[in-house]
Length: 310
Image: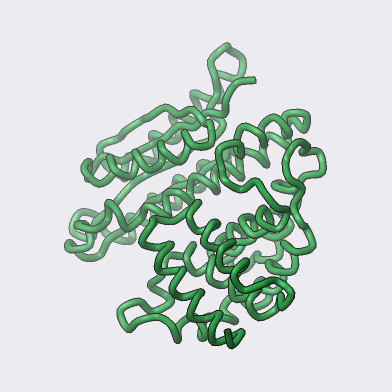
């Protein structure tokens, strides 16, 4: 079976920054056994026409021996002094519409910075966002293969997941998926229950064999509870943050880890506190930088003491 293949389409307006972004994306793809090719354009404004050309070439390749990509990852950075924010949103809308119309798995990190000083930190600030974009792309690729060719699903699942440290207990697998689902709920606030359904259908398909079976009831307990009120624990979390790091400034994935951990601390009394802490640290290590994992560790520790009086 051929390995899944992704095209990375990258704007080179700020080459030092996007080169680091590219390396992060390559690392995340390689970790999951996915091959890739690279296409670059001079400026983010060129991304829509480049994506259109790639999609059209893939369409023409259907009747040839040329390998069609399984997905597309876009990377681009725009700056207020270089492009109006309105034009940035036009670029985003254009690439999203192209990918949606073509029915192709697609994910992107297309960022707009308002302040020049922010560019100095852009290379590292969006590492977790790039990793999540890759994971979201993988999820879409899996779903598309299952819909178009169900017998391929089991093999695809093995390739996509084999290098991720999510094996082990059924509940660990469910925690990983719950954090991913809660992250996607924040990106799609009007379709939270739909996110839960998509995970149950795409990631936990009954046809997938040879992997640890997840605890579906545990997954749905966490995600359905948070789908009803995603910010229910935010005040408790905020009490343990500094003035410089308010909850809305945390990376979205960090919020997702903390929200899921808070659910267990408050609604799963039979699960020992050390297990909850260790489990969510392991989940965080799979997606976040070391400094972010340490930060999450401190917050969960403090919350567990307050909530469980230990």
